[in-house]
Length: 155
Image (cartoon, rainbow, N blue to C red; front, side):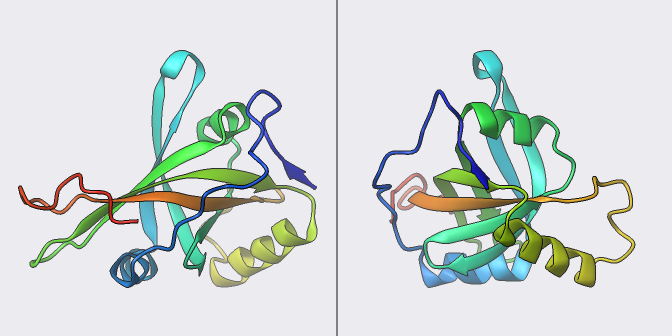
């Protein structure tokens, strides 16, 4: 079963965009990135998430602890991810999108098995099962520190 926020259902057609190859490479290389969500009354939240690129339009992570990020996404299924190259020449991206949360279904079970197999001891404190968060990319912005490119929408 997948969960969408009742007050903020996803539209029938989400305007997906394709991530640039450089961004896909950074997400694959760095693995853990900050994910920003918005809580009640606009309160910001940011948390580190270990992400995987499913395809050029989709990023996936496992929700392990079901705390603030999870609660925020139930109320507002939007998130923003930031990723940057940590050595010169610097490049950086901001990715905005919408999420669909999968729980107690085959998608969540497959991701749960993959995480358990590759991270045997790291997640002892987590709940029994994880939720699979599918992040559909809607906008990509260049965040490279330069006057020519910073803030420019690239996808």
